[in-house]
Image 1 (tube, rainbow, N blue to C red):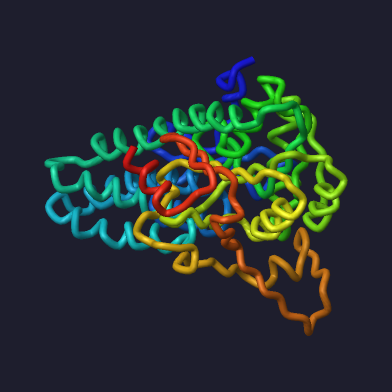
Image 2: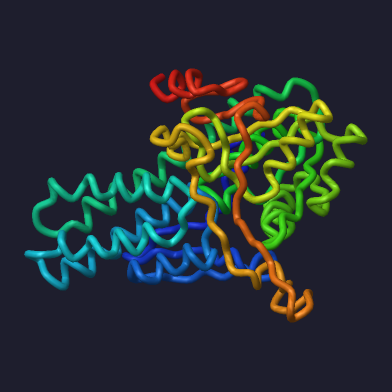
Length: 348
């Protein structure tokens, strides 16, 4: 099999002038699509985690701009460019950490100046191009990352960086899919990833859909898994990478990197260059989203902590570059990342 054979799952679709999103809050129990007709609904869907994963958020926001332009042009063919500014702001405020969101919005905004007449066709073409480029980048990164895995082994992944989080086969799961197809990965261990359980609900679902052997573990079992020598690589995605190679990803990623370094397990980050933010020098400058306490205090709508208890719920953490063995992008692989190496890769 090739990586293209695994390109079957889609979470974001444009159909009949509307945006359709697979509601990831309901998986794996229910596969339900929601249709959106305006930017307000799209922004709320991003905020509420109907769609998640940095590349998928960027693609979704691009389509949200198309819906906004459609509405604003109908509202005023003369003043739509001014009116749409509040839609860009609304979409930008939906999630603060994933830089792909702002990258996609900037790219869509750059199209506005040259548009005369209805903006829909031009902006839709750009949104579809962003989507298609992510699909192609996923496939290329998958092959580059799989090449780094030399001997057949099991790997560990965290959260969900698969087809559900991107436009294509995924970033981390794209690498895992390609490595499995090449006989380099024989088993996948997936952290359950509290509090949203993306590993349990989404990553395990994707692996089962592709008939790739997967074992779910509690997040706190990862160090023991490494201590027993059961995995040789940790492969994760990212929501923002700083210019020096520091990596922001789902909370719990940093502890995986520390444990991996201690146990001699390699640590790979897979993300498109739209995730790399060369405007910030280090991970200290990455805004970390804090989500509602109830996500930690409850499980599946049932309170699991005493009523008087409080919770701290950062959605992401930052892994220092010195704990990362490889960053894989569609432009190439950066081993033992530094600021100089990241700049060379981006310019290349």
